[in-house]
Image (cartoon, rainbow, N blue to C red; front, side, top):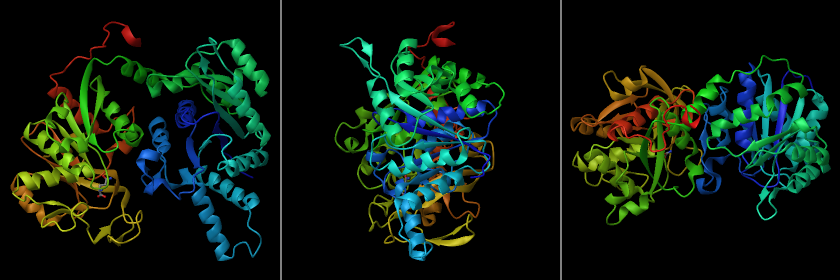
Length: 560
Ligand code: GLN
């Protein structure tokens, strides 16, 4: 295989949820800080072709890329930790791999030969790894699942072959394991790591570096023991200690010598890392001067994984104003009963995030009305914008039965509806949507341009006229109601360049009331907080009367 890129394969052992995604993203951040061009790819063992139709309760958020791929939420970490732009080549599932092999088989590409896991599936896996390697110095490939799962075996076999083909200076295996502290024994245990590495070696993969997830720093004897049993050098055993803020991980890995070890193993010559921006970020996050409380009114509140990018974007939004953002999750269904106002009390601002399906919609409409009337900052994202439009139509524009056709197909006033056809600037073609078409195939997905109207809140926040934001929705604002709502004061401040699609609505005479049809949370970075989130948190801070953070430590406290 002739390829200039170096490859790092990240696997996980013992249990899931050890933070493989964050570890991969942090490795990317460290290598980028040394001047390397990196990208990161996730290979997921499940059979779904993409996570687009998966339940957020089970799978967490569906992350959307510029090119419209509906992907695993780890791609969000990759984009937030590095400057790499993710796309459809950065996430493959077993389902997608099989789909393409079976398509080739049906087409006759294999000339009637028997199609097998080895070599056909493993060849396809190696092919898609190379797709993501284009133009980068180092590609980090995270293998989903845990060693020992049946599903991940073809991926592991493929990466085993891969290293043999590119040579050991060009590929590296990093294995993330757990080193638990057992209170009754008063010590940390290395056996789970030993077992996991043994399992990995039995399928032909000898890890080069071990990342040991633990709640404490590992003593040198412990590292030496792990090194001995797992057949790696002591300096290849890295403590991956629990952190308070995820953005501490790259700094901790660096302090453990991880990036030095990686460049040594891969024989890459680089400058020393420049980590000042990370140090500054962590110092700010550890000791913010102010605090705001944001109520998130949604359906998936039990599982914060389903709002991963949203939570991160809110945290980033607090950084410019030196402000900690505390989230108060409010189950929208609970807002449908009596005494609902009490559940929103104490929040400095209200956010209604994206969502699908009718459950809890009435509660969200109440929350939007509450924010509008009481002049509490309101941010509606995707469904949250549609909710703001419905509430305004009903209670301000005198259309009491106004609704979205998603929730009431027979509404007399479909203010949010399914646009049957629309001109798609991206493909320069007319797109058609229809209610009966296959689920998952009819959404407006990925980056679309938007023109901001002069003199509006949106325009002043972005300080630009043209923006591009990511979408994931089926329904749109119905232009038949534009004039009527505008007469009553609603401002349509962001439109598609041809003026046909409403992208942002806002209300004047209100401290901050804005809804957007797109998902700005997918484009926020800790080093470059998204302007809408920074603006929203600034409004919440003003609404709170600049409340101080009770934990703030003046003068050198908290690492500042
Ligand atoms: N359910 C709405 C639609 O499909 C909103 C989707 C979303 O919030 N992502 O248009």
